[in-house]
Structure formats: structure tokens, C-alpha cells
Length: 386
Figure 1: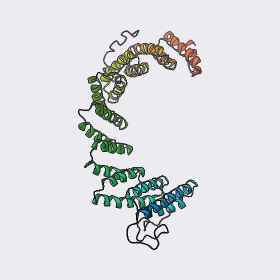
Figure 2: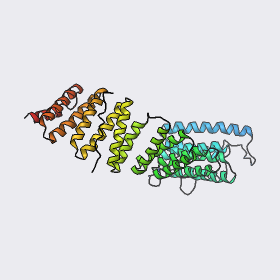
Figure 3: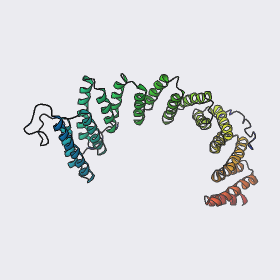
Figure 4: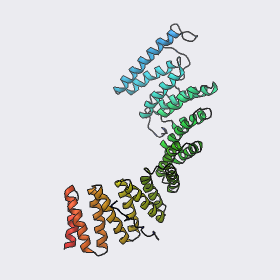
């Protein structure tokens, strides 16, 4: 680090989709035959003799009640640890649900698919996904948008996130509320650690909400978080600057100190040390004026470390002296102890043994009150005295 600008005298008045391919499956069903591909319905719960016509309302009601009982039975068996038996019951339920309401079938498929995913039952997972894709094709052919929405949610439950994203992209074309769908797409990308794809989606949302400050702030916060996770400090700093400007336009300074400290850290990562110094000082002054002492301490601590890394120990000590005042104001005894420790080390490095001793003795007193690291500070004191 070179040419960090001179410390600006902030001494100013301190007194003021998880893929299942790699999983080891527990497969009860043959991979050559999907139990959900029904060629002929033959079950005691259906009318006897079999009927070709659609079920009557009464027959549907009775079958629905029976299937709900089957589902409860499967859950009880599953809770007893009889996974194989539970899936046998669930398959029966899912087959028979094909005779009833499609939306309820989709929800049931998603519920059982989620369990198949959690139990690493890859073949069962594929069977259910295959059935959902059949319904998806049917829904698109018949323009059943409500089916597609429920299928997308079922894919989410099953962690079939690529399928969910693809469906939400389809729904986006005709949605009356596209922002909500874009938010969902961004969240799913983020859950897959596809940070750039998520960021691109939030950028689209920013463009769609240019005249909505609240929405802009929400999406800029999301973008800031994404770029932090992606360690993209350049883009992260740009987003934080946009967010700061937006808060300033609203005359809302309350969020600024914490945001500025975060921006300063981005500048450090980018080795823009002069900008980091300026931002930390601004963050400190604003936090102090708002009596946000923990943020003020963090800003000074970061600033002090910046100058210490640059070898400017005189300025570092000045900053730590101010840090002590902030920590005293906030009764941060642990912080005081650690700051005296840092100052003691710098004084020893500069050969100022008496100043180092004073700092370590103060740290030792605090350590005793906290019951923490007493031996360490006692050893520092003993070394200097000897």
C-alpha cells in the first residue's frame, strides 16, 4: 500500500438443483417402468365394474377422501422408518390422483418428490419428475397457466431448480406481475450459487423500477449481497455507491455509516487505499454524530489497520486514541482491552517501552475484570519490566 492520504484530523471534537445423479439411490422400483405411467386403472378404490366414463361428482368425492386417508397412512408408515412401504402407498395414491383434480395431483407429486429427494431415492425422484413433465407438456398445450405455476412450486420443493426457473421464464411472458416472478428467478439462481445470473435478473428489476425508490433500494441491497458472495468487489462498490446516492437523495443518512464501512472494505480489496481511507473517515464521523458507537468503532479500527499496514504508526496511534474514546463512550471493555493490546504492540515496535507498559497494564486491568486472557497480558507486562 502506497501513498495513503494524510489523516484528515478526525480528532474533531470527539467530545461531541441439487443433482441426484451422483447420489447413491435406494431404488425399490424397476428403472424400466415408471409406476406412474398407468396403462389400465385397476384398483379397489375405483368403481367396480370399471367405467370408461369420467367419474361422477360423488365417485370423485369418495375417491378424494380415500386418497387423503392413503396419504396419512403413508406418512405414519414413513415416520415409523418404513420408507419402502411408505413409497408403495404413495405410488398408489399418486396413480389414482390422475383420475381427479390435476392441481391436487401436482401438489401431491411435489410433496412426495421432496421426500424422495431428501431420502436420496433417485429413481423415485426421476419417476415423479417424469410425470410432472408430462403434465407440464399438457398444461402448455392447453394454456393452463395455473397448472404451470403449481408445477414450478413443486419443482422448487423437489429441488429441481432448473426446471422451476425454466417454467418461471415461461410464466414471465404472460404474467400481470412480472417483477414477482423475476424476484423468484433471482432467488433460485442465488440458491444455486449462480451469482451472476441472479445479479443479471436484479439488474432487469432495477430497470423496471426506475421511478420506485423503495424497490430500487431493495434490489440494490440484493445486488450488494450477491456481489459480496461472489467476491466481485468492483461491482459491489458500484452498487453501494448507487445505494448511498439514493439514500442521500432521500435525505436518509441513517443507513449510511454501516454502508460506508462496507464500501471501504470493498475499496481495500481493490487496493484503492486512498478511497478506503476517505470512506472510513466519513463513516466514522457520520456514525459518531448518530451515536452509532459500534459502527464508529469498526470504521476507526479498519482505518487504523489501513495505516498500520502502510507503516504509518504515528497516525495509527492517533486513530487508536480516538478509538479508545469511542469504546469508553459505549462501555466496550473488550474492545478497549484489544485496542490497548494493539497500541502496546506498536509502542514496543517503536522502542517506546514505558508507553507500551502503560498500555499493557491498562489491558491487564480490563482482562482481569473480564476474566479473559489475563495470563497473556501479565506476560507482556513481565517481559517489559524484565
